[in-house]
Each structure stands twice: as C-alpha cells, then as structure tokens.
Length: 299
Image 1 (tube, rainbow, N blue to C red):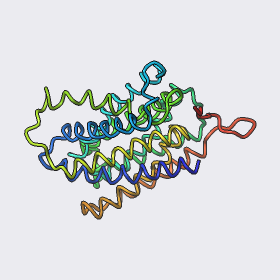
Image 2 (image 1 turned 135 degrees about the horizontal axis):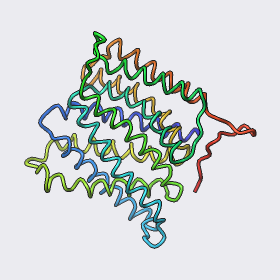
Image 3 (image 1 turned 180 degrees about the horizontal axis):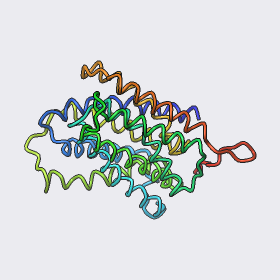
Image 4 (image 1 turned 45 degrees about the horizontal axis):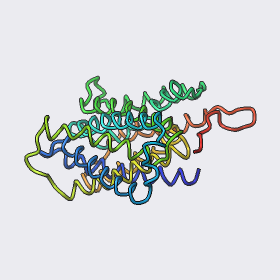
C-alpha cells in the first residue's frame, strides 16, 4: 500500500499543477481541443517508444487479452470525454472549483464499482455520499447563497462522473493487462480519435505555445501512468480516495501561479468533501477474517 500512496501522491502533484497551468492557457485564444490533441499525441508517441524498446513482448497481438484491450480502448474514449469536459469547464470556472468537485469522483467510482465490480457498500458509505454532495453544492453556489451557479461547473460535474467510470474500467481492464499496456492502449485510442479535431472539426492555424504543450504532455504522461499503477496495485476506490491530495495542490498552485485565493465557501465546501472521503473509507466492509471485502486481483 505504501507504493500505491506514493503513486497517488505523484499523480495529485502532476494533475494539480497541470490543471492550474491549463486554465491560464485556455483563457486565451488557444482552443481546448487543440491542446487535448497535442497532449494525447505527444503522450502516445512517448509511450510507443517506451513499449517498443522496453516492453515489446506486451505488444504481441497474438497474446494480447482481447477483453482487456477492448476495455482499455473504451477507457480511452471515456478519458477523452472527461478531459474535454475539464478543459471547457476551466474556460468558464476556476481551477479551485474543479480541484474540489473532482473529489466527488469517489462517489461515481463507488457507484460504478458496485455496478460493474459488484463491490458492496455500507450505511456509512451512503452517509459519506450525502455529506459529499452537500459539500459540492456549497462549492458551486455563489457567495450570496443564491441558486444560480457557474455554468463551467456543469462541465466539471460531467467530468467527475466520467473519471469515476474511467477508474473502474481501468481496474477491470488491468485484471488482464499490465499497467503500461492499459495506459498505452488508452492513450493511443484517444490520440487516434482526436486526430479528427485538426483534420475535420477545428483546423489548426498555428501550433500554439510549444513550452506549454510539452509541459502539459509530460505532466499528463506522469499522471496517467501513476493512475494505472495505483489502480493496478490498490484498486479504483483507493485511487479515488487517495487523490484527494489534488485539492491541496490545486489550491497551492492557484495562489502562486494564478493569484486565485479560495473563498471561505470554497474552503468550507472543500473541508466537507474531504472529510466525507475519510468517512467513506471508514465504512469499508470487512469479511469475518478481517480482510477487505474487495480484493484487487494481482496479475
């Protein structure tokens, strides 16, 4: 579990910094789909080189588990959907809002775990879900407590659900694949689909800031690899809970890079959501022998 904690901490650091940097770029004229295309293409090229040089045996189509590969390809589609929703959300809302709303992915992860992995849940987990929803509502409300909210947060809600589904699909796929196989297939499928963006949807008239593209690509590479390693070693639910460190890193980076200080309501909502995560974890069911109900398969 120590390795999994290290993996999820590295992910949170990389993802938190990437979100803040992306927001500063996406509020310019740089189209979010172009940035998404560049990131997926760069990551896929790097992973292709790595797999060919170091993991060539894992690219053998004859021995590649079909079900696992199909699930990883599906994860690529879901991942693109989630990323695009985040990008559009960042053009209308704040990175702090996303960093906190992202915590609700623990609920969507649990929902899809119960649905697809048959994981059981306890009354404490149901209570934790209610507490998290209350915290999220506080986050998206305006400071005057009116019922109006930032439309950018709707993109974040959609991304939160997508990431929960992505986590569970990844766990299911890695019952048959290695972490690197899953990551490679997921990102390659994403890059292939996103090729349609510059070719048919939004043609690229200028490349954009090279430094930002490289930074986001490398940070995303680190992030997606850490996600796969964490889920492979400890499961989707642990990842969704452990990645609450994203909240801390996003707030810190937003202050220093964007000059955005969290409001009192955001802090309160964030504390409620983070507290609900620990409550959620305390409700983990155990068998008579004291072991967790859900055991991650090791391959």
